[in-house]
Length: 164
Image 1: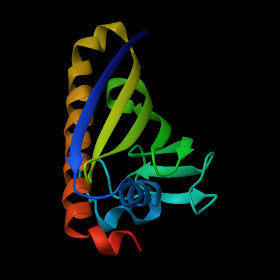
Image 2: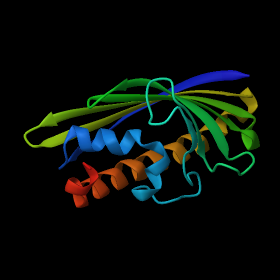
Image 3: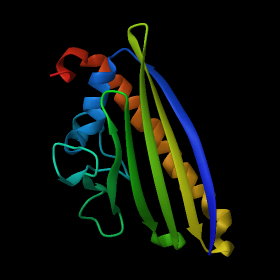
Image 4: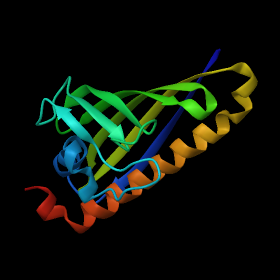
């Protein structure tokens, strides 16, 4: 088995306050109000303790679908400025384990918020299957871009309602 590391920064300016964005990102059981389901995400369940705080555990992906769900932990919680997650995701088709660290930074600038997501993954898989690593990377990249877009669109359309 070989392990490789991949990381990428994603960034977006959002016309909403850091507090509104932090509330959306930290209220994990309610993600589906702003993040429609996809092939890899159907919701977040079993969040304990709730409301979300440092150390909260959760089930993510497509909970209840064997091989399409995983557990995660909130590893950083500093409202309204940053939020961190850790997940270990099995990709059985490729005999891979993806160890994921996510860091959101929310910085207010001129009435807008700079949302930065730093995504770091350690991918462990058989060396013979390593050329297929790009399939894992593409899947994550597509989902992260979608998540950032949906967060921005929802927060800007519901700025006042999202604060409450």
